[in-house]
Length: 140
Image 1 (cartoon, helix red, strand yellow):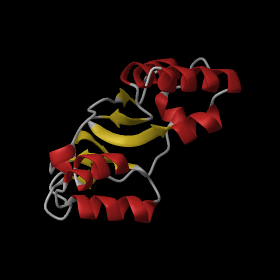
Image 2 (cartoon, rainbow, N blue to C red; image 1 turned 135 degrees about the vertical axis):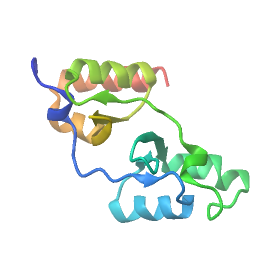
Image 3 (cartoon, helix red, strand yellow; image 1 turned 120 degrees about the horizontal axis):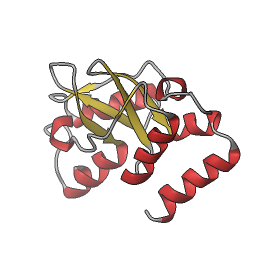
Image 4 (cartoon, rainbow, N blue to C red; image 1 turned 135 degrees about the horizontal axis):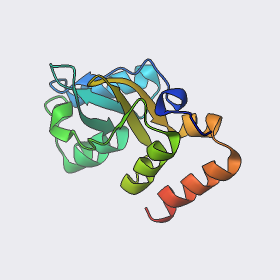
């Protein structure tokens, strides 16, 4: 795996939800794309954070708030990312340090992909994958 970068590990075709979009819209996008998280981008097309289906449930619905009135930007968290030329080891370390399961990949200030657990499962050797899972879930 030496020499491989975040670009080699990520999947492309990532769509952002704009920060001004409602949580209703964000959840519809997640459903339509069959994903559990979306990067949040501002009108400048720059990454503002990431939102998960769990964020919508726990921080909006379970609090009795209205997902048709709250925006993705209201819940923007997790401004953690790696440059596309970061080593795979650096990307894994960032995910482990931040206890996250999805990592945006940035190039020239724009999101170009996302590294998810599914990407890790497809690309990492079993021992490296097991080590990652242990580190992220064991202390979570």
